[in-house]
Image (cartoon, rainbow, N blue to C red; front, side):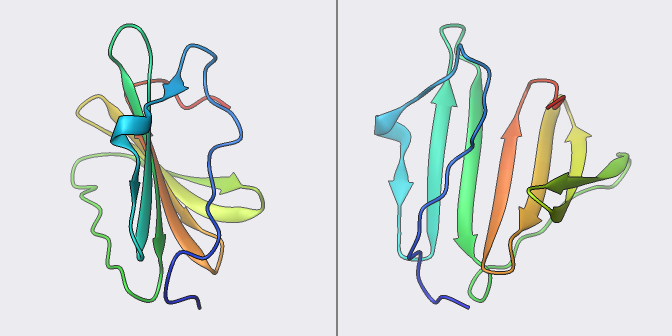
Length: 105
């Protein structure tokens, strides 16, 4: 497993009204965060992190979880307080994608 972010990933699809906010991009050795926003101020956050050095907690108490497939990798999708989140890994890096929009695609 990589000890640092050696290869940056980004979502292949987002609603067309969302654009990357370069001022909100965070690029660290162990994590990488992209923020996308639209004209209404809605945001979608994409995070990439090293699996070996990051622990992620998921509060799924009282919410329904759904198993999803992202490019052949199993993930977990849930909605909590109006925010939809998908968490998965590709056996090299971990990822989260969250925002207040329907996760249909």
